[in-house]
Amino acid sequence: MPQDTDAKPAEQTVARANQAVRRDYPFDDTQDLEDARRGFMGTAPDPLIRDAAGGAVWDLEAYGFLDGECPDTANPSLWRQSRLCSEHGLFEVTEGIYQVRGFDLSNMTIVEGERGVLVIDPLVCAPTAAAGLALYRTHRGERPVTGVLYTHSHVDHFGGVRGVLSDEDVAGGVPVLAPHGFLEHAVSENVYAGTAMSRRAAYMYGAALPKGPRGQIGAGLGQTVSTGVPGLIPPTLDITRTGQTETVDGIRMVFQLTPGTEAPAELNIHFPDLSALCMAENATHNLHNLLTLRGAQVRDPRVWSRYLTESVSLFGDLTDVAFASHHWPVWGRERVIAFLSEQRDLYGYLHDQVLRMLNQGLTGPEIAERIEMPPVLDRAWHTHGYYGSVSHNAKAVYQRYLGWFDGNPAHLWQHPPTEAARRYVEFMGGAAEVLRRAGQSFDDGDYRWVVEVVNHVVFADPDNTEARALQADALEQLGYGSENGTWRNFYLMGALELRHGPVGTPTSTVAPDVLAALTLEQLADALAIRVDGPRAWDADITVRWDIHGGEPLTMRLRNGVLTHVVGTGPAVGEPDVTIALAESDLRDVLVGAVPPEDLASRPGVEVTGEAGRLTELLGHLDAPDPDFALVTP
Image (tube, rainbow, N blue to C red):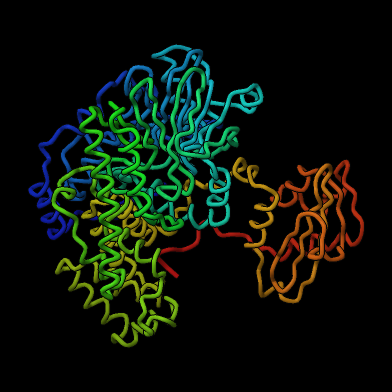
């Protein structure tokens, strides 16, 4: 991984702004630090967590520099948050509940039952989850895993499951619990737009950035994502309603479904015998995303706020500790209710104020620049925008209600970035003049403007080394001043790739286990979005799959669209080729594990008709680019 040896010090404008943060906020409040360290039992003796091939996927000591004083190259508020998130080890939450924190972006929670343990949210990859479970066993004994629970459908809450559970365990009766709709959303989000999301996540989490005061210092929600391969074991027990109760290994749980909040499928859990409440990712020590910078469906802050009210109503008077799948717990009934109430007000305020202003005619960027949070919320550390931000969340609310178009017809049919950039640069007097003026703006500390105007030069002429260097310098300064961890990572990743070229995508969610969990219809949909439409305009190909022991699946490529029909009926035409096979063989050919021309040689596969038509159909698919450009054309 390249070290950004060209990283510059903070300019005085940024240094002064960061120094002002120290004056504006209560840095003498140490409650969060006390809570983040409370119940510490120990950490792993080896700081490097490795995969089966010996490659390091996580380094527990990578953020040791955060013990030092915050330099001018970091926002002191983000430095404080990252310092808290870097606390790593096994922690007792309350008697019978333990958390492994600092071993990945997320936390893994372990609840002790009568015979073994229930594991909640087993991190991003198997090596980090296995290391966390081993740490627990070092301190609490060799208890078997008697249940696994996924709180929601994001990969950092299920990807490490194979580090704590095997297929044989599940076959032997160990339950895997998840909210209704979990599997559909877990696999569709990570496959349909998975390549683009993974590429943008490389910027969002900054896993490829050097760790240090001029590099990656955290992502607000946690430090970064581990770089192992995610896995997935499908749930065996769905939670379908609020109030549903389940007992696993003697552990009683009461569930609250919260769909459409932080994830499309999500739930909170109350443990009545322990007076403990798991808030999943619905209430953490930051403002969360309404639209994550890696890309996702826009979340609903109105529903989010209402579910938090419901959490307080259902469980507030029954809870002595609230914990989540990120950050550290909150202890004490009054503190828990105050925490959840302020989180509730945070999302409710954002929703209502954006709606008020958009109905006065303000656009998303105008609202984002104008909106101010109430002083009480602004002074509470857990409402700060370390991961989500008021700015991009306000734009997300606007997008949810009104979409990308702001109503101004001048914005209805704009030139795409490269074509617009060439015209802008010409209008502004050429690249040399733009860079001269932008250099003056840089000296004035107007880095936002530098980034906006120099971006035109870079897109008009990506080989202009002076433009790339100035753009990198300006992005870097914006990163140094950002309180938001993901903004800092985006800015610094942009600077890194402008200086050194693409550094790749450290972690991809399009993993074998995720692909294996797709239904055949989802797999067919995943192929359909890869069809090169114009190249397939004149193609008319029908392939029928006769699946042993199942209903037939017919695919037709026509008019550049790949459609599929399960079963028989009027929508199914006469096939060009019929292939009888096992479902496993069909999956292998559709995910590219078996070339279509080799399929007929597999045992039990029978091909009738024009065998070459399958090869022709699959030849119309495009391959996604996992390393596409972001800061250049």
